Amino acid sequence: MRLRYRQQVTAAGVSVVALALTLGACSSSSSSSAAGGSSASGGASSSSGGSKLSGTLNASGSTFQLTFQQEAIAAFKSVQPNMTVNYGGGGSGKGRTDLAAGTVNFAGSDSPIPAKEQSGFTGKTILYFPVIIGPITMAYNLSGVSNLKLSPATIAGIFSGKIKTWNDPAIKADNSGVSLPSTAITLAVRSDSSGTTQNFTQFLVDATGSAWSLGSSSTIKWPSSARAASGNPGVAQVVKSTPGAIGYVDFSTAKASGLTFASVKNKDGSFIAPSPESATAAVDAVALKPDLTFAAVWQGGPNAYPITYQSWDLVNAKQPTAADAANLKAYLGYLLGDGQKLLSQIGLAPLPSSLDQKAVAQLDKITS
Image (cartoon, rainbow, N blue to C red; front, side, top):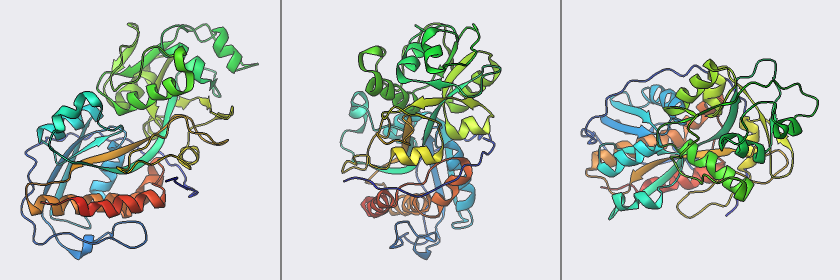
C-alpha cells in the first residue's frame, strides 16, 4: 500500500526530563476486566472500551520515544489510574534484548529486529506497532554559522572521518558565500545499540552508495576520534558542550537542548530543514509491509526531509495472562489514539491516519 499523509503539525520544544526507572518483572497484576474496543475513526478509544484495569507494564528501548513515552504515561493516568507504565529508555538494542529475555512487556525500537537478533525470538510472533515519526537532525556547534547546508556525500565524508575541518572544500561547496572557520570537526555519536544510528547510517547507504563504507547497523565502528555518548540526550550534550562538534540527534531532543541543525539536501535536490512538516512529507508515500514496518529515510518529494525515521513498540502476540494482554492493549491503544495528539507539542509528527487505523486493528492480535 502507499501511505497518504497531509496533516499539518506544529513543533514546540519541551525539556527532556531524566527518567530513572527500575525495570522489574514483566508480569502485570490482575485486571478487573479485559480492555477492548477501538474507535471507528482511526484511533483507539481513550477509555479502552470503558474497562478499569490495574497492574504494571515495564518497557525499555528507543530514546527517540523517550519524551513521548513520558508525556503519554503521565496522561494515561487519567484514563487508567490504577495502571503503572515504566519506560526506561536505554536504546533500541537494549529494548529488543530485554523483550527477547522476557524482562519487559514491550520494547521501543526504531528499526525492525535485525537478522543477527532473530534467534532470540524463535517461536514467538512479534507485533510491530508504529507510534511516532520524526527527523534525525545534523546538530552542530559552530559559532557564527546558523544556516549550514549539507549534502549526503558531505555528511558521509564527515562521519567517516575524511572531512576533518569545517572549512573543507566539500562543506564550502554546499555553502557558497558562507564564511566557514578552520575549526576541527568533532564527531558526536551513539555508544549504545541505537535505532537512530541504524536509520542514520541507512540514509548514508541509500543516499551515497559506495561513498559510505561503514555500513548500516545499530552499532558502528566510528573513527577513533569520535566522542560517543548514550542515548539521543547524551549525543545532544556532547554537541552542546563541544565547539566544532556535529552529531545525529532526533529533532525533539535537539529542539529541547537548544541545538542548531543543518538543512540536508534531499533526493529531489533541495536543501530541507528538519521539522515535523518535512518529516510528514517524507512519509507521504512510503511502502508499507504487511507487518507494518517501513523505512522513511531517503524518500522522494520536493519538501521531504531525507533523514526521517520512525519508531515502533514491539510486543509478543502471545501474552502469559489475560491481564497482561488487556493492559498492553489498553496502553498501546492510548498511544495510537489520544496519545497521538501529544506529538505536536514535542516536535514529532503523528502517524498517517491509514497507518494508525491498521495499527489499531492489530491490537486484537494480542492474546493470552
